[in-house]
Length: 451
Image (cartoon, rainbow, N blue to C red; front, side):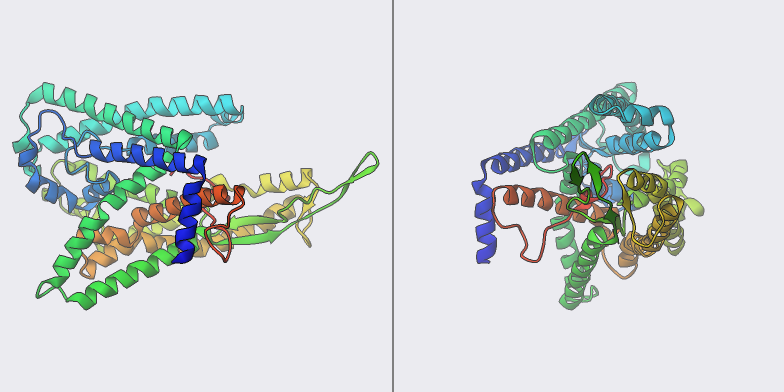
């Protein structure tokens, strides 16, 4: 406890770090206020039943989790930052697959600014499309929101689409300001705050459910908390786990000097989960497509549409797990190129001991990558289906989302990234780090993701 208090004092004594933390907290507070402002033309006093229904309904409940409850509250931030995330993921993939965009990205700072600007334009299009679908959801008679709508027809549709688009762009701007002047990745922090905002309420609901006569009692609740902590610790291992491939560098003679190119790191890090949260996001996007057929009438959906809307369905979990494993290998292959790494090592006079340079090195790195990725993909798939398993075992719908899936993986990754940045500031000022056993390593240590 004394160590923790001293660490907090050290953090607050660094003026630059204190300003970053304060600035980040202020913008987060603004975001949370906006999440409770209801859309124009909707009576907030008539939303209680509809909010409860949306918050506990399959994939819609997942969207509500990412938006910090704004989705079910019909807030001006109902779509949150997710349209921007979708646009960013699309542009990230296009820069890998399209040579012209890859060339633009390689132009340095100017190329990065162009890609970012195109991402913003794409965000407007994606947000407008999703806003139209959200209007259809609000006006559906069986959704519960229709009775709260005071405006009707084209006027409500137009004002809602404009408001939601402006709200998402404002949230995107908040994320960029946190990125530039605050602490951590602004977009990731906004998503994490939205997820954490629902945790206290979900915890209370779970405790209340277990306290009832048929709920299982306090012991079951404590077991659930223990399992949640164990899964969180396992995810930390997954995020930070890596395989170190040893490297050696030949000395190069420049003039009369011997130039040692070895540097401080003499290994190639291969992460167990190089793909991050992207496979789960891709799998969820694909699994959501069948529900679009009856997006405004989910309650009457049947057959395969009903299955894909229920993440606790056994067939949903099997298909979902297979897709997560497949997307893990696919996305890892897109961002991790053994041939390029082999060429870079060859140009810098580096080699793997016992392996010939060139194609043998590329084959060796690729083999190691496949062996490391397989257990990571299987565990990631297990994490992805944990919310469904938790719900089948008796957890409430909202609380089950914190047992795994995108929510928990994003929270663990973002917290580790933020702690890593705080520790960097501490070490720069010659303070001790956050841990005695070693440095905190976030997702950004080797690869970076759109989230």
